[in-house]
Amino acid sequence: MSMRTNKLQEWHNKRIKPEEINKYLSASGKDFIDDDLIIRTLENNKNPDKKRIHDILSKSMTIETLTLDETAALLNVSDKDILEEMREAALKVKLKVYDNRIVTFAPLYLGNECINNCLYCGFKKDNESANRRVLSMEEIRREVEILAGQIGHKRLIVVYGEHPKTGIDYMVDSLKNIYDVKVKTRKGFGQIRRVNVNAAPMQVEELRKLRDAGIGTYQVFQETYHHETYRKLHPKGTIKGNYAWRLYAMHRAFEAGIDDVGIGSLFGLYDWRFEVMGLVAHSRELETRFGIGPHTISFPRMEPADNAPYAVKSPYLVNDDNFKRLMVAIRLSIPHTGMIITARESAQMRRNAFTFGCTQTDASSCIGIGGYAEGMQKQKGNRQQFILGDTRSLDETIREYAELGYITSFCTAGYRCGRTGECIMNLLKTGQEGVFCKLNAILTFREWLDDFASPETKKAGERVIEKELNEVKNKLPEFYSRLMEQYEKTKSGERDLYF
Ligand code: SF4
Image (cartoon, rainbow, N blue to C red; front, side, top):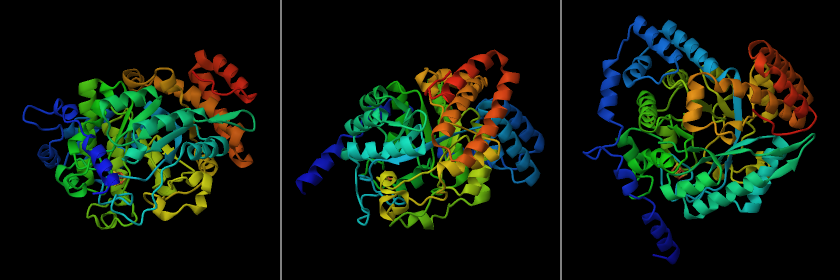
């Protein structure tokens, strides 16, 4: 064994701390995902009658997380008319909690070195054709200058591979670097104001450092909740091969004081109904234990990846109809949560997704390492994890959303005003967060239109702003004059004003 391999192995051996898992397991050593129970519950709730579904939809409207039985009933509906009623209810729930806003962000992949060997992924250790790279601090700055200074993003999801080169110290340095970049724009300045992190499960001590570095949401996706499938796809002896270490990543995050977490599942690895049940079980566990559910849920569909045949031959790939059904089921089952649909999906599917309850999306995305600075058109296939379905620019995307009546929000105020964790959960469940978000959406959209929009997009955006201002005047008169004060200041070039 070479010295380098030795060191890597040493790092590997110290990653998983059994004492940070075991205390959460039941007396018999089991975790909270009971595969047999999920399968039984799906079976026991077959052929639900219309009245039962109506009762469940009424419960969703109260913004209460559904039970596994209730979710199973929704997942078993196949009648077209009832499915349409469910879709309408999902949209109502979304509007009640999030109004007509769409939050945007950009993904930023900082490295593709990975110590794991997941069968469906092009970044896996054994893929020798992958062109490995980890961005230096200077390269990160260049990426952020484009994202914040030319495209106009305010919010990122930064993605790290599981590898000592992108360990906790690198993460902390990169977050600091990203927050430090400030770029002059047409009327003000561009800056990333919220960095969400998608990274491998960490130790409590590391998570404390991440909290102190000013992380937004901490995301870890379980990929599949089905134990046996998980075992098959994540080889034994790899860090990711430990199901429970990953499953309790959010428990450790709460322990470390990170109260804003995102969970997710990679759809296509196992039966989609089972995965939705897993997400609901995970949410209920976090709510029961910590009083706080996931702030966001992601539900990427598996895409073809370089040298990863499982990504195309899986028997569980999810077709468009079932994908729509699972989005509706998530929205109704975990009504308070933000739902993220990414540019993996086509423009048409993303348009649909907003009518099923999705709330967040990315645009102008580049998933190649270093791809923003090097020009998105030139990104190399073997430096990205999968293939995107929608490569339109943020400007084009925003114009389309504005024409459909949505306001794109760049708001990042929540976590900076302490509206996270239990506080945000209560605000979301009672519909109050919507008020702050509406006001901040208007201010941040104005900023973006003035700093980055093309003339056509500006026109479409201004029509939406006018409508929103009128709504505030009529429905929230107590906020109107303060909003207008901030709005005028924003128009004249002041930046980052929020409620
Ligand atoms: S899915 Fe993640 S952990 Fe697995 S091989 Fe790919 S980058 Fe590594």
